[in-house]
Image 1: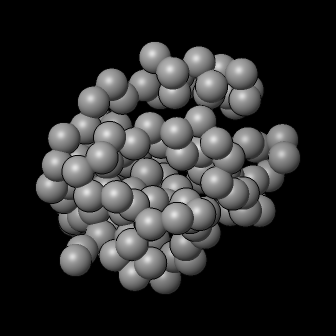
Image 2 (image 1 turned 30 degrees about the vertical axis):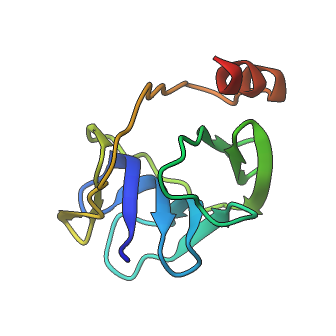
Image 3 (image 1 turned 180 degrees about the vertical axis):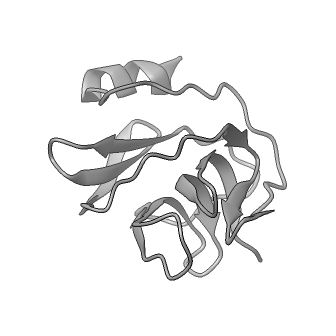
Length: 134
């Protein structure tokens, strides 16, 4: 019934990205915001189908600076992509199980999170396939 974030990267006021569940559509989402201040605008990519309660799901969020887009992969499959040109450096700690919005922690994850990995650079489809199978 609430937004819930598995992984995020802190900025001062907002997280730079959010790998999360959205109750609005009951889907997985990879979200970014265009600035680390109030009045930020979010860009999101959603899973094709609804998230399934009680089922382990492998999620990958990719920010591709060269292509100027974000992508979401669900269980190794590309769910979607969206143009994103408002990137900024979120230099704070990586958060597992919560996010930052408006300078406060929120979107607490109500379940288990396992095997979080963060990479510098864009993963290929082959690399994402390998991760989803492991």
